[in-house]
Amino acid sequence: MSRLVVVSNRVADPRKGAAGGLAVALGDSLAATGGMWFGWSGTVVPGGATGEGEVHVHQAAGVKLVTVDLSEDDHAGYYLGYSNGVLWPVFHYRLDLARFDAGHIHTYRRVNQLFARKLLPHIKSDDTIWVHDYHLIPLAAELRAMGCKNRIGFFLHIPLPPRQVLAAIPQHEWLMRALFAYDLIGFQADADLENFSRYVQAEASAEALGGQRFRAFGRSVEAGAFPIGIDVDEFAALTHAKDADDMYERIKTEYSRRKLLLGVERLDYSKGLPQRLRAFKALLKKYPENLNSTVLIQIASPSREDMGTYNDLKQELESLCGAINGDFGELDWMPVRYIHRNVSRKRLPGLYRVARVALVTPLRDGMNLVAKEFIAAQDPADPGVLVLSRFAGAAERLKDALLVNPYDTDGTADTIQQALQMPLAERQMRHQRLLAQIRLQDVHWWRRSFLQALADAPVNA
Ligand code: ADQ
Image (tube, rainbow, N blue to C red):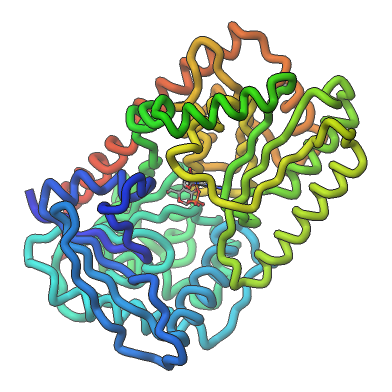
């Protein structure tokens, strides 16, 4: 088995317990192959213009961690400016929030070149390289320009928008050309793959070679949808461990007379938080039996606080929560509990378990793992109900959730009411099917099927 080299913007240290996400997903393969994880160290060197970036090498649980520092200017242009100021909004269909500053693309490219330069000396000729996410789209092209001939795969964790939205990025052609330097491109959902296929055929005159193979820009590439999952057993075990259990008992006692609705995410405009609060308000108005008997716990952890749009959203949310509590609350009942903090990964399953309904209603989401974690944490004998946005990648497979259009305030309120009223037998049946689905395509399936497809992809001459 060839050694696995993972490259992502941030590197998770497997020594730090309960790292979650990618660390869990890739940890096994990295450890089994004596692999390496490469990315930004998280350090921004103050006052720096465009630096070379110091490289740090650690060994952790059989995995080599190699990280690079970024200068202040590089961080501003590559991370805040281009990755999160252009690619994140546009890929989530939010052209209105994109800031196309000509300087940022140069920094984005320069940092990708820096990464390629720092990574290359650590690469052996038979390594398999797996690059993650929108920060690093041109990395393979930069590596190839430096002579790298390894198999390189790319996985996009966020959606790929339709051609006409993508084409609003002034450098869209350059970005898509860069994707053809990979041997395999993985998307979360069939919809993203479809958008890719349409774009490359219409804008780049790509030839469809059959299967999911395309030829353009003098290279051919394989593409596929690999919906990411969670480690269901690990999550179920976390649910019954002490921290989650304590959380469950505490919240259950505290809210013993009330039905709990739960929202958990990073505070991000893609997650549809204001729309959700408006739907909750409509629920209280339309179905007054929920007054005094239903509470929405909304956890929105701080995210990208150095960006203006995120501060605007924070204020909008605070004001919406305040207005709902002010208009509907009683001395002994506050309809919304809004918490702008992280909940530890060990306690989160307890919260999922105690909730009667989870509201996972992003306006657009690559996959959304909160939906899958909620399913894994439920008691099969008395499970909660998942209300899921049709615009989350997860909705393509989780058909037994109650699907909503988060832009439709009244429709969402009606569906939340349906979830609150759902009889036990129907809850059990839906949960059973959802659980089977998240087991079928869990995180190990995701990693195996991507790496197998990468190993099988024909190499370019
Ligand atoms: P995210 O946008 O971060 O990820 P998501 O998949 O929902 O979204 O969450 C990732 C992890 O963060 C989950 O394990 C969740 O438990 C945790 N998390 C979220 N909010 C939290 C909070 N307030 N407190 C504690 N933990 C919290 C991106 C894409 C997604 C895609 C993932 C993985 O945007 O669409 O599913 O990558 O590919």
